[in-house]
View 1 (cartoon, one colour):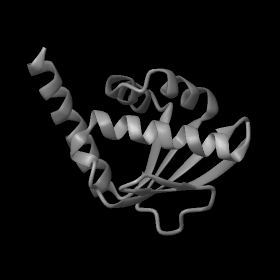
View 2 (tube, rainbow, N blue to C red; view 1 turned 135 degrees about the vertical axis):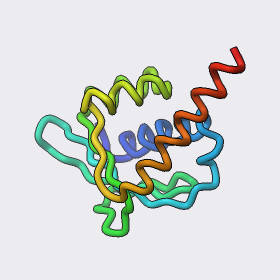
View 3 (cartoon, helix red, strand yellow; view 1 turned 60 degrees about the vertical axis):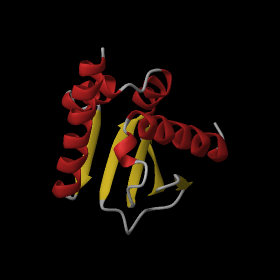
View 4 (spheres, one colour; view 1 turned 180 degrees about the vertical axis):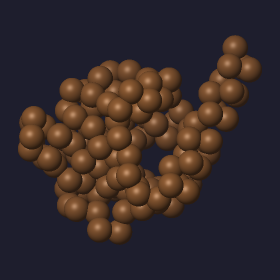
Length: 120
């Protein structure tokens, strides 16, 4: 897969995540994304809002998100909040960096899930 195709997929995944979490639409955050392609780790810098995605180490990232290609492909097919939470809970998606930002994002996800449940 070409670099531009992967960047487009990452952009699509981030936009889908943002649609499910409207509270993150204007969040200003730089995070790193490490995509493991069978031992070949590709590094991306993602800047919000946007998203602006470039293949480059994100030295200014506050949070790093890590997953393998297979998990990423699954998330492209069904990137629901519930699936993100399950993947994170089972270690298929890993994060590092600012605990404060990670806790904030988890809280936003939980509140959105509660709102979604109340609406149904």
